[in-house]
Length: 538
Image (tube, rainbow, N blue to C red; front, top):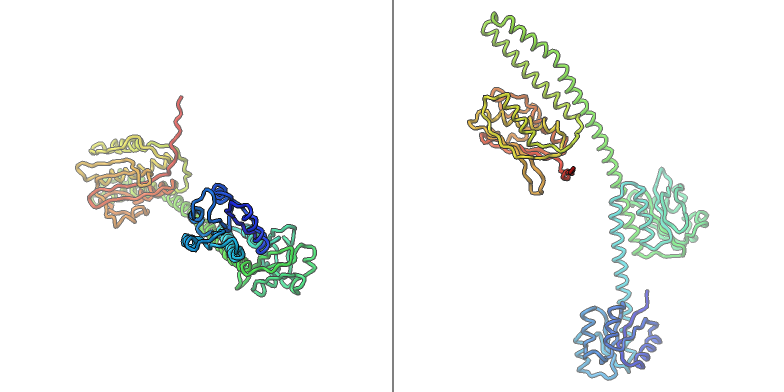
């Protein structure tokens, strides 16, 4: 413990020397700081860490009790004692009421001794509190570090360093129980100990700790029969504490060593046990984390295999169906051309059904092929003008159905970061839906634009005033082959919105819809946010 530091406010050099000599003779040496006036007192109070103040009742530059008031303002708990040559009972009472710890006569210096002892005890207590606070802060830091460890090697580095620092030891080691042997994984010591070595459990103190499931403190290793003395003689170790990692079924131990005989305190033993318990949790977390990683890797591989099989199956089926379907459609067309007039009304109707079914089947195969292709396509993003792309798509639709009146409103120059070919497929499907489901409206209307959400991210949308749908069915929108309207009402394969959802997923965005029956529909989607593109000026 450091020496008691006393600030003495006294303008008489003789009185100051007599007081200091008395204290040194009857109490012991103190770090004495003498202030002869207000300026020196204030300077010392601001500069020095003071444990006790002794003050004359009257000094130059201070009104009565002004020094006391200053101290109680800056350090309310700092002990303050008046030491006066002549004590007036009334003034003494006022000093005590103002916050002084005591008022002592210079003729009764012996009365300073209890005050000095109390100040010393207070300094010791404060020192212990600070030390505990620092230890607690260090333990919290260690717990945080251990929680971030993802391997036993990382844990070992944290533990061996922390164990040595927490109890001020000359060495620390991290030991694991591996196949019935004590494996000294890592160490932090002034000289090498046993890092990388293995010993049978029944030949070393770390093994004894793991087998007995209890912490051990050995102040003198050469007085303890459990210690293999020959193994320790080449080392600096004279005393140690060994703590099991996990008391119920120890998986290892933490050892700390001192170069002199030492009896570890109860606090030190508790700190080491807390470190061992935290280490146990960290090791269990690593096992869970590694198992989780392994399971995720296995599931990912299984999912990847399943996706590849699904894509291969989808492509193969769609591709293999084309040839027989092409034959059915071709021969049906030939039959219609050659024999249509002689089939009769019923026969011709059946043949037309075959032709229409073939067309629907061909459209479905094309959609399946497109969906499979999107899944395996690598996204190659760049800046795309969605407004120009939407205008081009709608113009093509109008050219193919020029008899139909359509009104559309496109927000100009809407830019997005994405794969141009995939984004065109997305817009084609959404705009085709809007075109299709506004077919029965007197004044069909389609709009496209972008807005910002609450987090200032771009949200793109395509809306129409078509037949809409019930939001209770919204969960089925993006599933393949799910249709919210009868095929007799609106043609389609039920793959379009599934294709849209796949494109959005490939870009890392999301898509959702809002609608109500007979009140149109609006589809919203997001795409990755990127920095504004660099503009080059020639």
